[in-house]
Image (cartoon, rainbow, N blue to C red; front, side, top):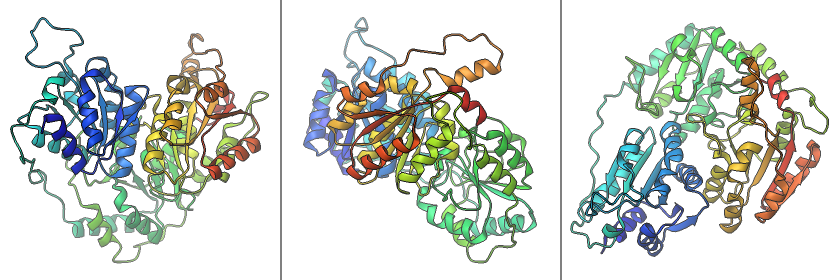
Length: 530
């Protein structure tokens, strides 16, 4: 058995069935061994897109997403998805080539300090050799899946890939936890007492919530009728059509309303709340009762905060009825938030952003997965898309990197082939990776793409205007996004009519086929929502 075969077998033994990436001469042996081991290689058109798709696929499959790239430029292009996985708690295992150690020091062609580059943002960075292959691959897999989920990065030279392995059966054994956990019963009693004294409690659910606890969490919130808000990365963990749902925190649309609600609360329970999603400092300025099960995305932890097992804690909380009845203490904020979505388009032949949400929500089923890119539309969908079920909303929020939405949709559709997937992207982000629509057609991962067209980097343009700066280089000429879609083998439509958009989307959902809908919007309309 050579080293590449041992890598492939370790990955297959871990249940990994897909690898995303781009080939290069230095990883051909590894890709071939992955094929032999039953791991399908999903060929994409850029390494960054491959890494994003892999991370979303992996998190939905409860395993590390696997991305493979060559050395030099291929590895360098993985910095974006690895950084996204690091800050957004998505499990991602990246394996790239590197020059053999025995090459002379003067051989610097495509030579980059890859380990030094990725070390600060990966839990494991190592080199695969014929002597350590089983241990190092297993350790990387375990590191990705230890909470908080994160990235690991391994290199293997083309020469090393073909070497016969010298160590068989050596496995990585994870050591005992290094931090003691709080007693769940005692924590539950303390939390119950705090809730009993509060007039306006507000539960803030964040990235640190384990989706496997969604059922218990919903039952606790529903039985106690606790007011609740969420961050975008856990949208759907609570049914956002519920009367006790207050809104989405962490800088989305209507953020001023949400910050006012936070200030009005007399008890703020940060249940799995991770500040990596928060673009302001209220989490440090307001009194917060933290209920955390794992460290935050960067390994940080609020001082003097013990960790507690959420499953055991929720079981203890549900043993008795709610200690009080709070009614709807945030009703005014909830209504103000919803009223902001009402309006009319500010320019002819454009669609009011609120009508986009309304029309799409009427035709997309509750289990549909929505992914977004980064830009003004992210704030719109992040706040107002009515997520109903866990793991049905995906955005880059900790990193907030553009070109996430379309790539994430491919990963999501491959993980959930029977579920409709909708990607909401801006025309700026769409132009960065629209070519991956061909990938979706080729790998049979159909999804719907809504391209919000304002011919600008509107979020930055609005910021420029707010700072009273001269309008400078934020606008671009409109690309024909319908023709872009058609060039990739996908049907396209451009419309400013919400009903026409909804009808086309409904048909695509029923037929399980790809569709791109270009929707012109007026950039200044976003200002009314922010």
